[in-house]
Length: 154
Image 1 (tube, rainbow, N blue to C red):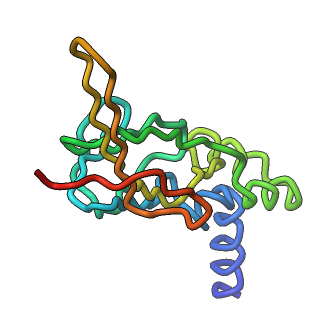
Image 2: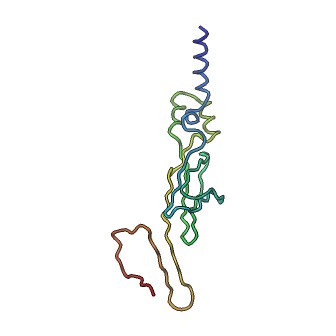
Image 3: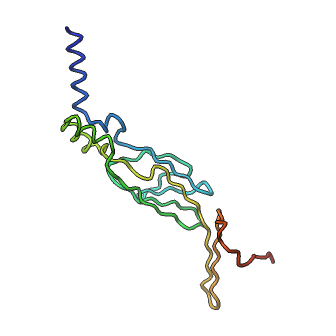
């Protein structure tokens, strides 16, 4: 009889926590890569390390991310939050308290994209007198592009 009461009590406690909190937690692992590697990862203005890296970010808000490497154009992306599917488990099981827990911890959200990959492109611009020169260097060439010239070493 005591074992049955303990089992009921433990099972009841599961309903007092949120499904998303249990299944996914309040943070999410987001991976960051760049080509070339070693670029700075800046999240909401704070330097968070170099690529490649995986960061655990809180799910309760979206983020503005930039990938920066000296000599390359900065790549910017937004991590958006949307409703985590596990929240619907609370609604189906009638766990209003669990829904409140998920909302307060941020576990009711997921961040997208889960993987950020930046291909850094170099751009050089000459803004002095005379003709303007803009050179863009692409690390991954699209086969549909048309070649219009070739740079020669002096």
